[in-house]
Image (cartoon, helix red, strand yellow):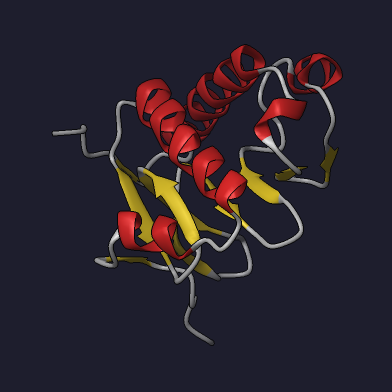
Length: 152
């Protein structure tokens, strides 16, 4: 089975942010790091070359595929900022209705710029996503283990 390429690493979050070409997106990325760290009380870490994640959790699918992923995170992609939140947290649809200009897929929410969204709703979504994921991990009775490291 192929190894997951998106793993937590020791690359510098600040160096990554500084490499974002678009100044507005770079500023939005810095603000998102502040928001995610405040809502999760977890430090920003690089996952792969382009995802900023907060916390980590281990997953295992019935197929046997398993790995680690950020508890929540985002990536300032060229076309849009991609937010990685749970696809099933309580109130997700209602929050997305109030969120502002975005598109979404299962666990990804895409925004062009932070001026287009309600940051208070984003804060609530991050908290709800973390709460949901932690509760699901605890329900798996040892099949998945959440790894949390508080911000220093």
